[in-house]
Length: 93
Length: 371
Image (cartoon, rainbow over all chains, first blue to last red; front, side, top):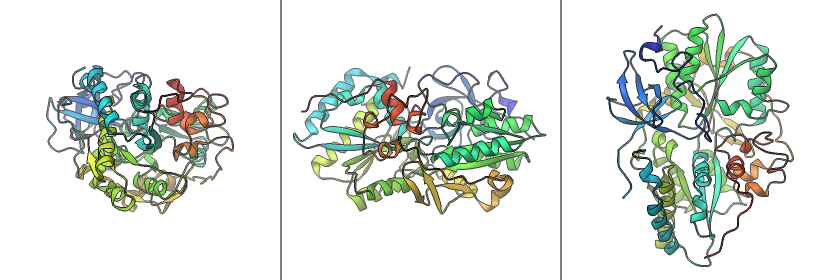
């Protein structure tokens, strides 16, 4: 079996996708239709996984199998541990 | 924070709010439904409704996946966790959803090995660390979440993790919207579309709403400016007599969605003939189960699941809240017998639930001046 820890976020009990800490205040932990923008820090040796950074500076191991050609520094939208979309960076007009 | 603060700019927000004022027709009452619980949460967290004229009413839709899980389905999960020597994993908010006589958290206190996870991948990791025990992931969520579950099941199969299975309660958003639109006691003028569901399914599945029901829908992001702009776009459509699906959340949502995610979902899941929704009853083809190809990973086939059916508590009016017929504060038990600490209905459990959003942000009444 492949070890997901090959690209492990520093997450207390062993590198969970959620970072292992308390959920952000006032938010449903994962289950609602909420997703979080993250930046890809590194691609893991385990295919389909990447180490990503959220807006709070926390690292997460993220499934990237739903996106084509994920690269370092890309902005992605992560929900329930999986990248579901690429973010086109831009401020409102 | 870069790329976040820009969408929370108060000056820009005031400008969009001023534009909205010019778009409303005095004397006309507008009812717009935000489909997604994430929108409900943002609206009350940022006070967006206070920026709207009083004749623009936001109605809260069924888009909180915790809120729509019926009590019987919770009881099924509890039975599975208690009657088998398994590790039962689920998202955190699911643990507080009341079943007929207890929650998953109560069952954990009674000795069941129930663990909170942040993603299906975490559940799979637990399975790999506990090869001698069965690990079940209780999957809930709309099309936003289902691809993550699907990927994890594919990974479990590819890696030969045989002690992992999934109790699937994933649901789809279009059938309940159609049911709501058919409801005789609900009059809506337009929809704020579920941005993150649309990253997966795209905007096209919602074209039936303008085509068949004559209501505009704008796919919206979740920041305050996103929601305000979406309201303005709906009102502009109504003023100019247009009726179509528009995409405000173009920085994330491709109109055709994520083809790879749809492909993975189609491989791993199939539609159930019926699925029960709290407050809405049974809706055809609105729930997902594992496909025959993934049957060996289906906890409902691996273990005995009672299939409990329980009527919603009489005092609870979650169904009417979910249909947008009443505001949370109009429920008989809102803020008294039903609070986030001791919820009766699921809308009070999740922070994306309409009742919890109203309660947590102090919205016990609505007092605004008419335009």
